[in-house]
Each structure stands twice: as C-alpha cells, then as structure tokens.
Length: 205
Image (cartoon, rainbow, N blue to C red):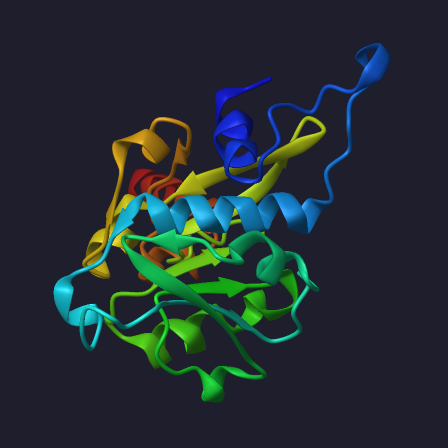
C-alpha cells in the first residue's frame, strides 16, 4: 500500500486495506477523503491571527451540497488538531461562507471557485476540492482518482497566498501543481500557438 494511504488510514485506526484472503477492503470514498482532511488539519500551520484566541476551534467547512454524510463527524469526533478542538460547519451557498480554516468545495460547486476565492480574499483558509484542475485554478489542494484509490495534489502558491504552511510530510506525498495564470488561462493554448505562425507567414509575403 502506498504511504499516503497509510498516513490517512492510521488516523482512522485502520492499518491497511488488506482483508482476509488477500482481498482489498473497500473504504468509502468520503470516509477516505474525510481522513485526508484531518491530515491537512494536522499538518498545516495557520497564522496566529486566524484564531480569536487559544480556545478557538479549528473550523472545517463544506460549501454547497455535502457529499460526506456522517463521515466528517465520525472522523473528527473527539480529535484535535494543533491542540484545538475541531468544529464542522456547512454553508449552503457561497454567500453564506463565514469564518473557517479548511473549506471543502464539492464537485458540484467547482464552477463557483472564482466566487469563493473572491469571497475569501487573502484570508488564511485552506481551500480543498475534488475536481479536475481545481488546484490549477487557485485551490490549495485537490483530490483526484488514482488507480483504484484517491490521491491529492497541492498548489503551493495558493497556500502561500493564504499565509498557510503545509508540512513537508504531506508535500512529499502530493503531486505538486503550478497555478495557471488567469489571464492566459482564458485564451486557448492552440490559438496562442497559431498567432506567431500567421504573423511569420505575412512577413514573407
């Protein structure tokens, strides 16, 4: 089993996927993703002013339709991160987003990533998604399918912009992505490549 799965499952009290007779034990997708979120809570450092005081909880939030069910509560129950209790909150829509430290953006809300980033500004919030190119579009981290499991990627620039420090222990297990420049992202790459060719041909005429 890969080390990143061991890291996550260790926090759930599961030593491996292996079951009797060598068969793999299937872990529900959002049970595993909840474990990943807990690891991010443990292995990420927030600036001191991200919390009102020493007793303030670390808030893990979901915006839009929550795909976790009871997995978040079950995973975070009686656990702490950075010596703080963990509170789960849910925002029905982007406009409702309030104080939080980790914000999970389900696939159904990915089209609103720009609105979410605008709403949060430069607040120290670790924005995590589960959609293609989510990290490239400014998310701090993103889950993606790999083989028969789940892996994650990290956008260091987005985390730095939010004044967050993700532990090297997690970064070593992640696929590192570089954020696309928004100005260039809107223009198809193919068109950008064709322009110089056309200009060079005109210069020969």
